[in-house]
Length: 306
Ligand code: UDP
Ligand code: MG
Image (cartoon, rainbow, N blue to C red):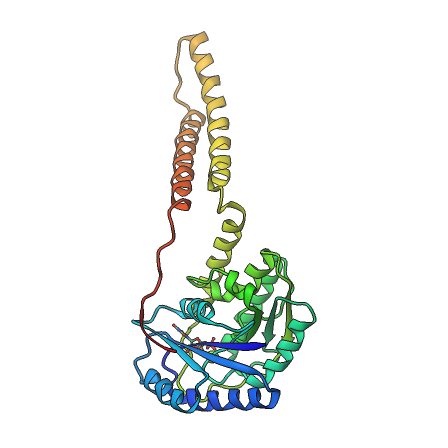
């Protein structure tokens, strides 16, 4: 059984050689047949030259190079698409994830899971990072309905079929266990060792939490309404038009009986409700049209190493 290790990277030159050596050591001890798929997400620091020279030492290395920085999600998506193994492990390139955890992740998969996520139980990141991250993980597990401690750990193992079924774009790499769980895959978590960053620096700042929250709202919305957005917008539209229409009808009847039309706040409010309601219908129809448009390619590849 072959194991594919997918590693997205952006300016991680110094980490690559020790990373490959650490992986090769574990693979040798375990006797796995394996490959590494590096996805160079537009590095400007010579990371790709480093990969080229590592390839001369380790034939198991394959690589994809983007033409610019397209983000970690695109990197994971391309790497997983290229992977040939029955089991796919993803990890970060910065030596924070420990390849020693791979056999345990694999053993957990074999217990009958489709995705096993690493849990950085003891984290070596600044508190300004770990505290918001705890809150974010807690909120995600409540809203998504899947109990994990750490959704965004870079270190994860999948059955190939599961990994390849996920649509990873935008910032969705933070929610992969959620997406998998919603699609009916069996998801588990095991604690993994986490190290401090030795080289380079983190590519993400605090705003990843704010954006992460908006992404979660979008996911919850898409989950229910992706195939029928008009069910969402149409419901609001009908409520507004219904309530506004009734009140306007009442004013109309009074007008007919008394012959005098009184412009009243309630009447203006109802008129507003009807107009906004019609707007919501238009939004809904537009959204329906968007759904029917095919998604665009979100990255371009400069070169590959096979
Ligand atoms: N990464 C990437 N593209 C990006 C940003 C990050 O491929 O645009 C990679 C990065 O090189 C690393 C992994 O994603 O291998 C995780 O990034 P980082 O360590 O900066 O995140 P943190 O651990 O600080 O959350
Ligand atoms: Mg990191």
